[in-house]
Image 1 (cartoon, rainbow, N blue to C red):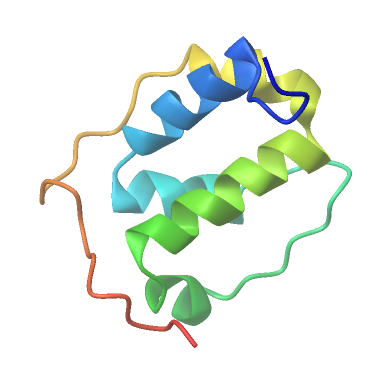
Image 2 (image 1 turned 90 degrees about the horizontal axis):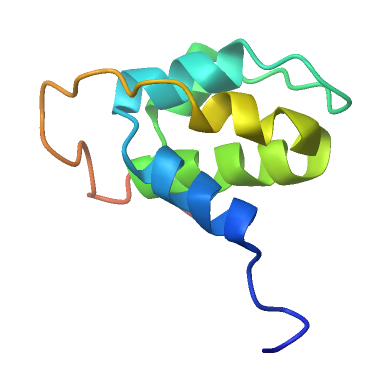
Length: 93
């Protein structure tokens, strides 16, 4: 196994984040409390694709609050009104 291969916990985090609705992703980012200080506006977050929101949330948990990953993995995802949310890449540069 490569030294860069994801750990079991990282794989579980990826799976848990992948199940979150768009609203839940934004809520997690806006409510984040940890070593990293986030100051994203709702306008900024709403302009990002779901994939970018997931990428940011995973990075935040892995680097800013890794000890909270088990808590996040035990939460139930919010139901998504639209399966898979936006994937149009709006807001990307």
